[in-house]
Image (tube, rainbow, N blue to C red; front, side, top):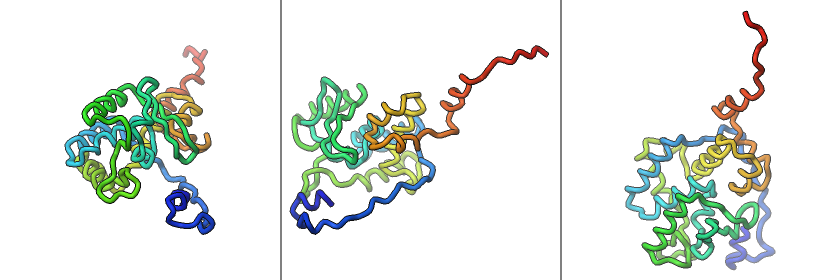
Length: 213
């Protein structure tokens, strides 16, 4: 609603107050490495030439898909491997990216001769200049990957990336910095109790038995 007011579509004093709904406690769906690879392959062959990079960014950063769609080239610091995100749920932040994604971004910049503007440009008549949705293209990639379009959404990629960090043993405050969550309690939802990382962790509490027979 703040964006609508800023764009001049509605007067600032007329912006309604809408209570934010809490996210449900349901199980978080995260993709396996094999499923991620299949999704990327499905995106690579799609007629939408932006889809593969969009999927790669979401899977390798844990960015919200809305943040990914609004990325700008002038906000990318290749030396530090950071994207500056001026508008996010928890406020502005620097988003770190892995070296593999940095290489893909460098190739894309060279191919397009891009130095500024949105990474994902909006279509004809776009009032904002950036891409508003990848929904149909993403669903095509999901189907090609043999996944369920009713369960796998763009937000699933964020769940997948965060879950991968947690399972790798990354401390939760660091996960919070990477994911851009406002509170640590929101990150705690990703500490599944049935993962191999939990089984490995509990072994540190084991004590060798003194009983010999």
